[in-house]
Length: 343
Image (cartoon, rainbow, N blue to C red; front, side, top):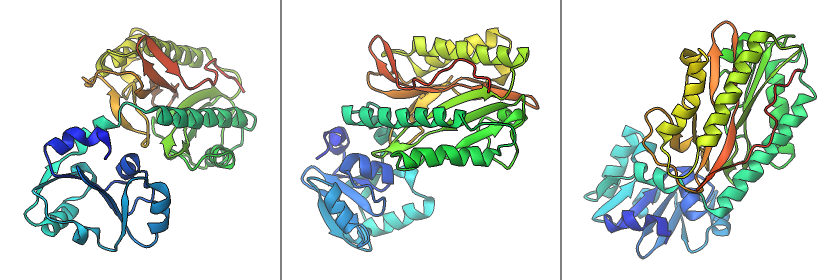
């Protein structure tokens, strides 16, 4: 039995996992179809015939049961912890009907917390994925030019990562240019990159199921004084955040350490999101580094540090690194340069 579930099993007869990331995290099964049931006495993966062989190869210490209706396989329990935030209202009703008198106990919040501190194996995979993303950035620096379309740039990043060992992207690649860089989560279009544009790249890949995430902003041509000021403000804010992040500080205070720099430079209203977030099997998970986050950082949590300034109709800058929280600071997993690059 996965020892991280001990506390949940003290208050319930079983833990039922139905999301692909939690099934993989607690059992090793990466197929994403079916369910995982863990009790004090048994560990079971339920999946259909498409994934039976893969499950048998991936899991250790789990019984694999082939079924087209995993709900019908679960015996009666007094209570089951389930992933309340991972199912729809309709699915919840189906689950209630299938399990009869079994009491369903919400468990998503606690399960998220259990994944915050990474194992050495996870840290290794995340570091490998981030290193590959950095190599992809170095590669595309050689192809960015006026006339290249945003979606072509995104495709080049993704192709490089997949060709060199990435299992896929961590999220939809952001590759935007010019005034569109004021969109924190802008989607690549057929817009052509022009001389004088900011170009923002936010991307990542997966290795061993673990995600990477990084952002860099460059200028095509010669940067203006305003572009340099914005870029250097973000760079200074990020460094303040990196210097602050360590075991024992809150997500709220980490956010404030970087936000203060941007506010003091007169751009406070243009920092439109939180400083960072946890990264693991999901690219956005706990802990959050935000103005409302009371979470206290602990050793071997992995978080992003990504302040930004976004000015409508002008453009924006974001710089993002991934770091591992340690007792006396943090280890930066993103070695790509943060000096302003003019292409």
